[in-house]
Image 1 (cartoon, rainbow, N blue to C red):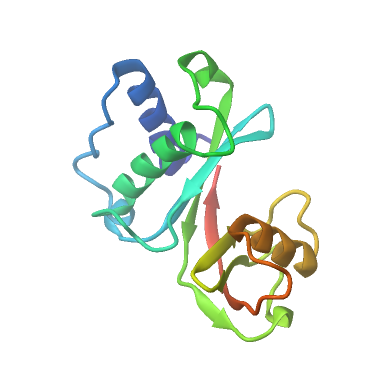
Image 2 (cartoon, helix red, strand yellow):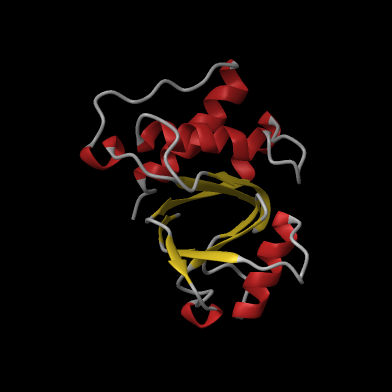
Length: 170
């Protein structure tokens, strides 16, 4: 089985930018699925360790293709947790693309399952986001704690919670 086109697009985006110092142009023509407008996350790993992950909960670009191109570059170059990816690393990187389905507001943590749903928590203008089915995130409590940490939201602050599903491509 070959690499999924979304994953290839993310990989090409990063490689093109690092080698040519310009953004990869949007493919033309676009397949029907890449014409859609939806949020997407691009995760980059090196030897199974996270190297960058940036995404959008809602579409911010004209289509999914540009959403993937932009988020791949942000994950590679602008994830504040990591130094920018270098051209020497390119062959050691693996990519995944999560295409988000719409957010669903939930009233209780019992509506969560960290293997099935991603989570967005919001409180006083702060937000934490966690994708579903991540290694080491085994409980709802883990999921909420990590989201609070990412959003710098204190444990005693009330939360608005939203769950979402993704279609993950590797």
